[in-house]
Amino acid sequence: PGSVQANLRVIFPSALRDNYTPAGSLRPGDYSVSIGEATIASSLMGAPSGYGQEIRFEIPTGLKSSDLRIEYRAKQRNRSVPYFDRLILEATTEMIWEASTVSYTLPKPTSGTFQISRVNKGLGADPTCVIGIGPEGRVFATDAGLTKETIQCGFESPIVSIHLLGRGDWNAPESMRKADPPEWLTRPIQAEELVVVPKVFRNLSTELVRLLEVEGHSSSLIDMEDIFDVFAGGRFSAHALRNFLTWVAKTWPEPQPASVLVVGDSSWDFWGRYPDHEHVPNWTPSYHTHKEPDFPTDLWFVEGEPLDRVGDWFFGRIPCQTVTHLEGYLAKRRAYDRNSDEGWTDRLLWISDDNDPVERDTQDILGRTLPLAYQIEPIFIHNYPYIDNYYYGENLARIQEMARTESQPLDFGKISPAANQAILDELTQGAALA
Image (spheres, helix red, strand yellow):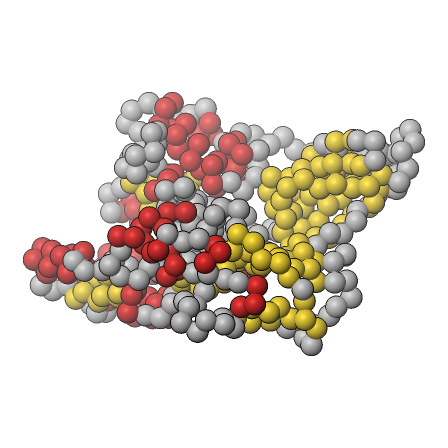
């Protein structure tokens, strides 16, 4: 690898109230960049979006240290304190094709266009196939785009390795079988609810369908992988699930399914681009929309056209990360159906990230409408400490306008691990509804 190019974006939230301008917040003498004992030269400029500033610097080749330090020392002590919005590090590794099979491992899951240098440009020197391997072992084949000096290949999905195959590198498979299309592609399903499930949860999901039928709801299992195959060419894609549901609504005869239940958790980073994404496995995708860029949403799958934020289907998710999680869910559901007297069946967990008067009015409505037997456990997110969300997205332009009218400090770009833990603790005790 060569030198590493670094780009750090800094935001001053309080300055947004006063018609924020980059030149009015951070100045060259207000900060320093160092790695270990070495001071790194940097440049300061306004962010291309117009919101925030960017500190750009280069980490030289051969400089090794576990500590990267950006220190803020404002000369004017009465100035507001910034938070670091994101840090992007970019490095370049040269890939070379020499007319024989070669493989490259990437430092992290990466998508986009890759450029490989061509050393031998003679006849027969070009690769016959370029293959990318995804984080979960998915295989993607693509064509090689040839220029005079390079081979270019593109992958829309993140990959962790690239493999270029030359002539004679393909071996005939020992056996082949015909892959039949899913039955629902030609024979519409007659059921009230579609249960979309990854194969890893399929065996247990048959028990879920049985429980639904006992409760009087006709349901049918749909393999998530079949949806990917038909509507996304085998790729893990949120658009595949949305397109499948749109296709069902347009082509299946009445009576059509009225609801869809997906099994499996999802991370907002379903591409696998950030280092913490392994903590939440992506079994069934979620999606970030332009209307709600702060968090992923499942409403997008069922709101149809136009995007009016009104669901055309009922949509639910069992966010299990492991088979054990799903077993626990099914055990609780069976216990509830037996009218179990374990205490949690009358507990309702109310999670709110709003402020008054919304919370006050909601609490009043719940108190007047719910049966007295129910116990409401409230968790107000604003009562817990926040930290910076270092993976916050690009959609910051709306903050300026909202900050002018807000009477309370904004928490955009923040997350609260303490609130997350409080929610997990309450759910561990059990709740009939959250």
